[in-house]
Image (cartoon, rainbow, N blue to C red; front, side, top):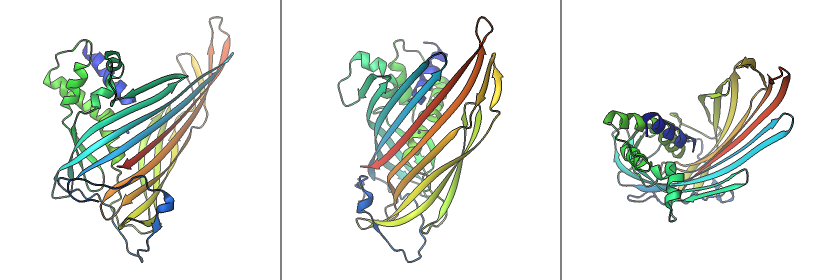
Length: 341
Protein backbone atom coordinates (compact mmCIF):
# COMPACT_ATOMS: atom_id res chain seq x y z
CA UNK A 1 0.00 0.00 0.00
CA UNK A 2 1.41 3.36 -0.93
CA UNK A 3 1.61 6.31 1.41
CA UNK A 4 -1.14 8.31 -0.28
CA UNK A 5 -3.55 5.39 0.04
CA UNK A 6 -2.84 5.22 3.76
CA UNK A 7 -3.72 8.90 4.07
CA UNK A 8 -6.98 8.30 2.21
CA UNK A 9 -7.88 5.67 4.82
CA UNK A 10 -7.41 8.26 7.56
CA UNK A 11 -9.72 10.63 5.71
CA UNK A 12 -12.35 7.86 5.48
CA UNK A 13 -12.14 7.43 9.26
CA UNK A 14 -12.84 11.14 9.71
CA UNK A 15 -16.09 10.78 7.84
CA UNK A 16 -17.45 8.21 10.12
CA UNK A 17 -16.99 15.21 16.75
CA UNK A 18 -21.40 9.31 43.27
CA UNK A 19 -18.08 11.04 42.57
CA UNK A 20 -16.06 8.91 45.00
CA UNK A 21 -12.75 7.43 44.09
CA UNK A 22 -12.53 4.51 41.70
CA UNK A 23 -15.89 4.89 39.95
CA UNK A 24 -18.41 7.63 39.23
CA UNK A 25 -22.05 6.51 39.22
CA UNK A 26 -24.48 9.13 37.93
CA UNK A 27 -27.55 8.38 35.89
CA UNK A 28 -27.65 10.24 32.58
CA UNK A 29 -31.25 9.15 31.99
CA UNK A 30 -32.69 11.96 34.10
CA UNK A 31 -35.87 13.39 32.65
CA UNK A 32 -37.08 16.93 33.01
CA UNK A 33 -40.03 15.81 35.12
CA UNK A 34 -37.63 14.56 37.82
CA UNK A 35 -35.73 17.82 38.13
CA UNK A 36 -36.55 20.03 41.09
CA UNK A 37 -35.49 23.66 40.93
CA UNK A 38 -33.00 24.89 43.52
CA UNK A 39 -33.01 28.46 44.79
CA UNK A 40 -29.40 29.59 45.14
CA UNK A 41 -30.58 32.85 46.72
CA UNK A 42 -28.54 34.98 44.35
CA UNK A 43 -25.35 32.93 44.76
CA UNK A 44 -23.19 32.74 41.67
CA UNK A 45 -21.45 29.48 40.82
CA UNK A 46 -18.54 28.33 38.70
CA UNK A 47 -18.87 25.34 36.40
CA UNK A 48 -15.66 23.33 36.61
CA UNK A 49 -14.63 19.75 35.94
CA UNK A 50 -13.34 18.21 39.16
CA UNK A 51 -10.95 15.43 38.24
CA UNK A 52 -9.66 13.15 41.00
CA UNK A 53 -6.88 10.66 40.50
CA UNK A 54 -8.19 7.11 40.30
CA UNK A 55 -11.77 8.05 39.38
CA UNK A 56 -13.42 5.95 36.69
CA UNK A 57 -16.52 6.82 34.69
CA UNK A 58 -18.28 5.90 31.45
CA UNK A 59 -19.99 7.96 28.79
CA UNK A 60 -22.34 6.88 26.05
CA UNK A 61 -22.24 8.96 22.88
CA UNK A 62 -24.95 8.52 20.26
CA UNK A 63 -24.67 10.32 16.94
CA UNK A 64 -27.57 10.34 14.47
CA UNK A 65 -26.94 11.69 10.98
CA UNK A 66 -29.51 11.86 8.21
CA UNK A 67 -29.11 13.21 4.69
CA UNK A 68 -31.53 13.84 1.84
CA UNK A 69 -30.23 14.87 -1.56
CA UNK A 70 -32.44 15.67 -4.55
CA UNK A 71 -31.43 16.59 -8.08
CA UNK A 72 -34.19 17.93 -10.33
CA UNK A 73 -33.30 17.89 -14.02
CA UNK A 74 -35.26 16.06 -16.73
CA UNK A 75 -36.30 13.73 -13.94
CA UNK A 76 -36.06 13.69 -10.16
CA UNK A 77 -33.24 11.76 -8.50
CA UNK A 78 -33.11 11.26 -4.74
CA UNK A 79 -30.70 9.79 -2.23
CA UNK A 80 -31.48 9.28 1.45
CA UNK A 81 -29.45 7.96 4.32
CA UNK A 82 -29.65 7.73 8.08
CA UNK A 83 -26.94 6.41 10.38
CA UNK A 84 -26.90 5.92 14.14
CA UNK A 85 -23.52 5.33 15.73
CA UNK A 86 -23.14 4.49 19.42
CA UNK A 87 -19.88 4.69 21.37
CA UNK A 88 -19.14 3.69 24.96
CA UNK A 89 -16.14 5.52 26.46
CA UNK A 90 -14.37 4.01 29.48
CA UNK A 91 -12.41 6.78 31.22
CA UNK A 92 -9.92 6.68 34.08
CA UNK A 93 -8.21 9.69 35.65
CA UNK A 94 -4.50 8.82 35.61
CA UNK A 95 -3.23 12.05 37.16
CA UNK A 96 -4.31 15.58 38.08
CA UNK A 97 -1.94 18.51 37.57
CA UNK A 98 -1.61 21.51 39.89
CA UNK A 99 -3.95 23.58 37.68
CA UNK A 100 -6.60 20.79 37.92
CA UNK A 101 -5.97 19.55 34.37
CA UNK A 102 -6.74 15.85 34.22
CA UNK A 103 -4.70 13.26 32.36
CA UNK A 104 -7.19 10.67 31.22
CA UNK A 105 -6.88 7.14 29.87
CA UNK A 106 -9.74 6.65 27.38
CA UNK A 107 -10.93 3.48 25.67
CA UNK A 108 -13.87 3.12 23.26
CA UNK A 109 -15.04 -0.23 24.61
CA UNK A 110 -18.18 -0.57 22.49
CA UNK A 111 -19.04 0.70 19.03
CA UNK A 112 -22.28 0.03 17.15
CA UNK A 113 -23.53 1.23 13.77
CA UNK A 114 -27.02 1.01 12.28
CA UNK A 115 -27.44 2.59 8.88
CA UNK A 116 -29.91 2.73 6.02
CA UNK A 117 -28.40 3.92 2.76
CA UNK A 118 -31.18 4.21 0.16
CA UNK A 119 -32.86 1.13 1.58
CA UNK A 120 -29.67 -0.87 2.08
CA UNK A 121 -29.32 -1.91 5.72
CA UNK A 122 -25.87 -1.88 7.30
CA UNK A 123 -25.12 -3.00 10.86
CA UNK A 124 -21.94 -3.39 12.87
CA UNK A 125 -21.41 -4.30 16.52
CA UNK A 126 -18.04 -4.81 18.17
CA UNK A 127 -19.69 -7.03 20.80
CA UNK A 128 -20.58 -9.64 18.17
CA UNK A 129 -18.35 -12.14 16.43
CA UNK A 130 -16.97 -10.62 13.24
CA UNK A 131 -16.10 -12.42 10.05
CA UNK A 132 -12.96 -11.58 8.11
CA UNK A 133 -15.20 -9.81 5.60
CA UNK A 134 -16.66 -7.68 8.40
CA UNK A 135 -13.17 -6.77 9.58
CA UNK A 136 -12.20 -5.59 6.12
CA UNK A 137 -15.46 -3.69 5.62
CA UNK A 138 -15.40 -1.92 9.00
CA UNK A 139 -11.66 -1.56 9.57
CA UNK A 140 -12.03 2.15 10.40
CA UNK A 141 -14.20 1.33 13.42
CA UNK A 142 -12.02 -1.58 14.54
CA UNK A 143 -9.03 0.76 14.50
CA UNK A 144 -10.41 2.89 17.34
CA UNK A 145 -12.23 0.10 19.21
CA UNK A 146 -10.52 -1.15 22.40
CA UNK A 147 -7.39 0.85 21.60
CA UNK A 148 -6.60 3.10 24.59
CA UNK A 149 -5.33 6.63 24.15
CA UNK A 150 -4.58 9.55 26.47
CA UNK A 151 -6.17 12.97 26.71
CA UNK A 152 -5.38 16.03 28.81
CA UNK A 153 -8.52 18.01 29.66
CA UNK A 154 -8.45 21.21 31.70
CA UNK A 155 -11.01 22.16 34.34
CA UNK A 156 -12.97 24.19 31.77
CA UNK A 157 -13.54 21.07 29.64
CA UNK A 158 -11.10 21.96 26.86
CA UNK A 159 -9.24 19.00 25.36
CA UNK A 160 -5.73 20.44 25.21
CA UNK A 161 -3.75 17.36 24.19
CA UNK A 162 -4.25 13.90 22.67
CA UNK A 163 -1.44 11.35 22.83
CA UNK A 164 -0.53 7.65 22.52
CA UNK A 165 -2.22 7.08 19.17
CA UNK A 166 0.63 4.91 17.90
CA UNK A 167 -1.28 1.72 18.75
CA UNK A 168 -4.18 2.87 16.59
CA UNK A 169 -1.86 3.47 13.66
CA UNK A 170 -0.29 0.02 14.11
CA UNK A 171 -3.75 -1.53 14.30
CA UNK A 172 -4.95 0.33 11.21
CA UNK A 173 -1.90 -0.83 9.31
CA UNK A 174 -2.36 -4.45 10.42
CA UNK A 175 -5.96 -4.49 9.18
CA UNK A 176 -4.89 -3.68 5.61
CA UNK A 177 -4.51 -6.44 2.98
CA UNK A 178 -0.93 -5.32 2.42
CA UNK A 179 0.78 -4.14 5.57
CA UNK A 180 3.43 -1.49 4.95
CA UNK A 181 6.61 -0.70 6.82
CA UNK A 182 6.06 2.72 8.34
CA UNK A 183 8.88 4.93 9.51
CA UNK A 184 8.71 6.69 12.87
CA UNK A 185 8.13 9.96 11.04
CA UNK A 186 5.28 8.51 8.99
CA UNK A 187 3.61 7.05 12.10
CA UNK A 188 3.85 10.42 13.81
CA UNK A 189 2.26 12.20 10.83
CA UNK A 190 -0.56 9.65 10.52
CA UNK A 191 -1.22 9.90 14.25
CA UNK A 192 -1.48 13.70 13.97
CA UNK A 193 -3.91 13.34 11.04
CA UNK A 194 -6.04 10.88 13.03
CA UNK A 195 -5.99 13.14 16.08
CA UNK A 196 -7.17 16.22 14.19
CA UNK A 197 -9.69 14.42 11.98
CA UNK A 198 -11.43 12.23 14.56
CA UNK A 199 -10.02 11.54 18.01
CA UNK A 200 -9.79 15.09 19.34
CA UNK A 201 -13.21 16.20 17.97
CA UNK A 202 -15.00 13.12 19.30
CA UNK A 203 -13.29 13.48 22.70
CA UNK A 204 -14.31 17.15 22.86
CA UNK A 205 -17.92 16.05 22.34
CA UNK A 206 -17.94 14.33 25.74
CA UNK A 207 -16.18 17.18 27.54
CA UNK A 208 -18.14 20.37 27.03
CA UNK A 209 -16.20 23.64 27.20
CA UNK A 210 -17.32 25.77 30.14
CA UNK A 211 -17.18 29.55 30.65
CA UNK A 212 -14.41 31.02 32.78
CA UNK A 213 -16.77 33.24 34.76
CA UNK A 214 -19.27 32.94 37.59
CA UNK A 215 -22.86 32.23 36.61
CA UNK A 216 -26.32 32.95 37.95
CA UNK A 217 -29.72 32.03 36.58
CA UNK A 218 -30.25 33.63 33.13
CA UNK A 219 -26.49 34.21 32.66
CA UNK A 220 -25.36 33.91 29.03
CA UNK A 221 -22.10 33.51 27.16
CA UNK A 222 -21.13 33.11 23.51
CA UNK A 223 -18.72 30.86 21.61
CA UNK A 224 -17.78 31.47 17.97
CA UNK A 225 -16.67 28.74 15.59
CA UNK A 226 -15.62 29.41 11.97
CA UNK A 227 -16.63 26.88 9.30
CA UNK A 228 -16.92 26.25 5.58
CA UNK A 229 -20.03 25.16 3.67
CA UNK A 230 -19.50 24.75 -0.06
CA UNK A 231 -18.60 28.25 -1.31
CA UNK A 232 -19.65 29.93 1.94
CA UNK A 233 -17.49 30.92 4.87
CA UNK A 234 -19.64 30.42 7.93
CA UNK A 235 -19.40 32.16 11.30
CA UNK A 236 -21.21 29.94 13.81
CA UNK A 237 -22.24 31.72 17.01
CA UNK A 238 -23.57 29.61 19.88
CA UNK A 239 -25.34 31.42 22.71
CA UNK A 240 -25.45 29.49 26.00
CA UNK A 241 -27.85 30.35 28.79
CA UNK A 242 -28.38 29.13 32.35
CA UNK A 243 -32.04 28.16 32.31
CA UNK A 244 -32.23 26.87 35.87
CA UNK A 245 -30.41 25.32 38.80
CA UNK A 246 -31.84 21.94 39.76
CA UNK A 247 -31.41 19.20 42.33
CA UNK A 248 -30.12 15.75 41.37
CA UNK A 249 -29.95 13.36 44.30
CA UNK A 250 -28.22 15.60 46.88
CA UNK A 251 -26.27 17.64 44.34
CA UNK A 252 -26.85 20.91 42.55
CA UNK A 253 -26.82 20.92 38.76
CA UNK A 254 -27.00 23.60 36.10
CA UNK A 255 -29.48 23.20 33.29
CA UNK A 256 -28.20 25.02 30.21
CA UNK A 257 -29.58 25.78 26.76
CA UNK A 258 -27.65 26.38 23.55
CA UNK A 259 -28.84 28.14 20.41
CA UNK A 260 -26.94 28.42 17.14
CA UNK A 261 -27.06 31.41 14.84
CA UNK A 262 -24.96 31.80 11.70
CA UNK A 263 -23.75 34.47 9.36
CA UNK A 264 -22.08 33.73 6.04
CA UNK A 265 -19.89 35.28 3.38
CA UNK A 266 -19.44 34.22 -0.22
CA UNK A 267 -20.39 35.00 -3.80
CA UNK A 268 -23.60 33.09 -4.45
CA UNK A 269 -23.28 33.40 -8.22
CA UNK A 270 -20.39 32.22 -10.36
CA UNK A 271 -19.07 29.72 -12.86
CA UNK A 272 -16.79 26.73 -12.39
CA UNK A 273 -15.58 24.43 -15.18
CA UNK A 274 -18.32 25.62 -17.51
CA UNK A 275 -21.10 25.20 -14.94
CA UNK A 276 -22.94 28.34 -13.86
CA UNK A 277 -24.22 28.25 -10.30
CA UNK A 278 -26.55 30.35 -8.21
CA UNK A 279 -26.85 29.35 -4.56
CA UNK A 280 -29.75 30.28 -2.35
CA UNK A 281 -29.03 31.52 1.16
CA UNK A 282 -27.93 28.57 3.32
CA UNK A 283 -30.32 27.62 6.12
CA UNK A 284 -28.55 26.54 9.30
CA UNK A 285 -30.23 25.86 12.63
CA UNK A 286 -29.10 24.39 15.92
CA UNK A 287 -30.27 23.94 19.50
CA UNK A 288 -29.12 22.03 22.53
CA UNK A 289 -29.55 21.27 26.22
CA UNK A 290 -26.86 20.48 28.79
CA UNK A 291 -27.06 19.19 32.36
CA UNK A 292 -23.90 19.68 34.44
CA UNK A 293 -23.39 18.54 38.04
CA UNK A 294 -21.95 21.55 39.87
CA UNK A 295 -20.91 19.79 43.08
CA UNK A 296 -19.28 16.74 41.49
CA UNK A 297 -17.93 18.70 38.54
CA UNK A 298 -19.04 16.41 35.76
CA UNK A 299 -21.30 16.44 32.70
CA UNK A 300 -24.44 14.38 33.21
CA UNK A 301 -26.15 14.71 29.87
CA UNK A 302 -26.07 16.83 26.73
CA UNK A 303 -28.16 16.76 23.59
CA UNK A 304 -27.40 18.99 20.62
CA UNK A 305 -28.76 19.05 17.10
CA UNK A 306 -28.09 20.92 13.89
CA UNK A 307 -29.69 21.04 10.45
CA UNK A 308 -28.29 22.44 7.23
CA UNK A 309 -30.13 23.03 3.95
CA UNK A 310 -28.33 24.12 0.80
CA UNK A 311 -29.94 24.75 -2.59
CA UNK A 312 -28.04 25.38 -5.82
CA UNK A 313 -29.41 26.28 -9.24
CA UNK A 314 -27.02 24.95 -11.88
CA UNK A 315 -26.81 25.58 -15.61
CA UNK A 316 -24.53 23.77 -18.04
CA UNK A 317 -24.41 23.04 -21.74
CA UNK A 318 -24.76 19.56 -23.21
CA UNK A 319 -22.85 18.13 -26.18
CA UNK A 320 -25.15 20.10 -28.53
CA UNK A 321 -24.33 23.35 -26.66
CA UNK A 322 -27.88 23.58 -25.38
CA UNK A 323 -28.36 24.90 -21.87
CA UNK A 324 -29.57 22.46 -19.27
CA UNK A 325 -30.82 23.60 -15.87
CA UNK A 326 -30.62 21.53 -12.71
CA UNK A 327 -31.70 22.21 -9.13
CA UNK A 328 -29.78 20.44 -6.40
CA UNK A 329 -30.97 20.38 -2.79
CA UNK A 330 -28.96 18.98 0.11
CA UNK A 331 -30.38 18.59 3.60
CA UNK A 332 -28.36 17.23 6.51
CA UNK A 333 -29.27 16.89 10.16
CA UNK A 334 -27.06 15.80 13.04
CA UNK A 335 -27.89 14.94 16.62
CA UNK A 336 -25.36 14.16 19.35
CA UNK A 337 -26.45 12.74 22.70
CA UNK A 338 -23.95 12.32 25.55
CA UNK A 339 -24.97 10.50 28.73
CA UNK A 340 -22.98 9.43 31.76
CA UNK A 341 -23.54 5.78 32.66
